[in-house]
Length: 260
Image 1 (cartoon, rainbow, N blue to C red):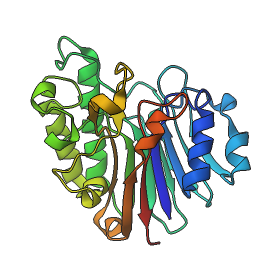
Image 2: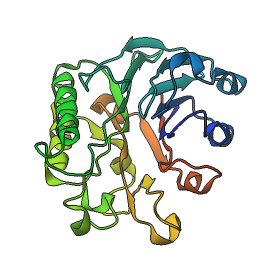
Image 3: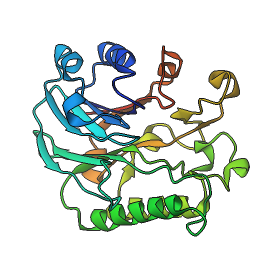
Image 4: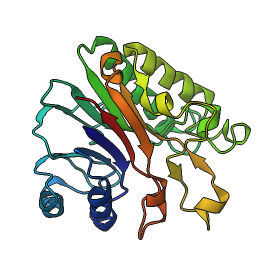
């Protein structure tokens, strides 16, 4: 089974590259973040035409929204409000084999890494804290994937020292993400296959005139699994060429293959 995750930055605007990715890579399940569409307006037809007929949507206007599109039957499990303000940032389903699949879009956190000066940063840390408490009580096999908006390792960013005070790589965020990982014993599947200190990025800013030449990337997108599920993982890939496709997202898809 191949499971993909991609912050698409508007599924309707970028439906062309989504279709291209699905035709080329054919994952069994695609988890999308930042869909930017309310449920009634979600473009179901292109997905169904490609065989993705088991779909769950948690949509919202603005910069939120998540979706899970699948070729295999799924059962919706939950929609948790870790932001505590009604934003559509989580969608959980259960696979036919009983494994839970949790798709999450963690808030970016604004520009200033100080919860007093920037309430959005505090909301981000609180979001991760709620996820941590949830992880502590989680039982059974599970996969947690999505845009975490944190690059934890020095080799997850283009310049560790330059980004220490930049939201997404600050020590307080990295510590919070480490606490979340420890709460359930989550295995970082990306770094299981692309071992540190190897370069591993999933996001490049639109501000760069030539994203590939400057390569100022960060690893903001992750796929984690509980230990028993991690043992079934057989491959993990980052699809960087998608960043150069027509009307690209600033994120690229990650795909993990499982032997189940």
